[in-house]
Length: 399
Image (cartoon, rainbow, N blue to C red; front, side, top):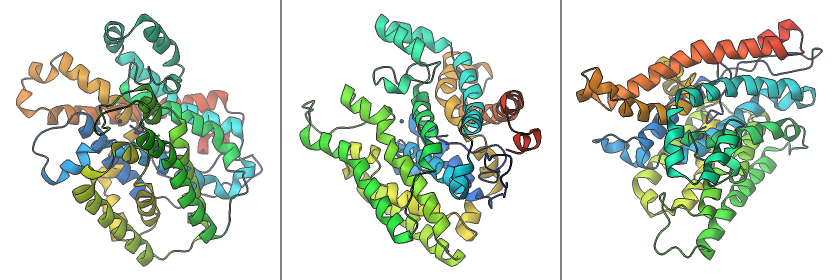
């Protein structure tokens, strides 16, 4: 893949992972939740793994099993997105103003998305030469509207990784209603729901492997690209259960009281299982099951474990990781097209630094993402909210 990656980050508001007050009616309280900096840090690692998956350098050594299967981490962004939204809004969902919530999401996502389309317009020429005229014009219409993910044939049009935004928009559109549902309150019931969502999410991918409707000879891998496989990889519906898992996990976070020691144990065990899986089982696991969220319970446990103070969460909250993590949405959206443009126009050679590539290109991507975050995303978001929000100015500015 990318979550979009995804608000592959999911994508919290600027400057903090979860510290923003929720969008509430003016009469409601605006109590801030404790920040979860470790989740910002882990988003940095997920985004970098996705970049290296798409443009893999040599000599990665112990990291190679993670990089070679980096598409798995797109689903983690959807999981974290559902979790963070629920962490913020779970106890005040009825006061959530749908228009203000959607406006905040739009101001967060679309300005950067539009900027990336504009600066990578060169890719449209490549699309013209590589697609039928019908597909080309379908992509030209759907992509600016963030609807391309609904069409498997043009989901990767113009900016390959931006298909995740279609899923993001669908899930965000549904969230104000999802958060009002009568969710279970007891932790054991929420755990059962988590397991049920995980199983349901794997059903379409398992059925495809069992029925093999496209009569594919040999194993199905990341290069298999029938319409059904593209539907399972790129359209919003296969990611609903992953997002709902994040929502359920957020509800579980509210209903549990875990000590730092317990969260430390959960984090450590989750990381151990992740490492064992990637170093021993990943190459023997069907690709579609991996893409469908086979590891979702382990990543959910890791997210829950990192949602509190202890040595492992402090490691993921390392300041350089937080700095890049704040701009991870920009980094995710920019990386695919900008990396290609850097080499189309031979930027490393023109700088006489080709010997440092691809690491030079990675550094340029991170620097550009930070610049876009500070000089485009934040100002555009503030301008949109100040212009269109109907909340009192103090609340609109805060949220």
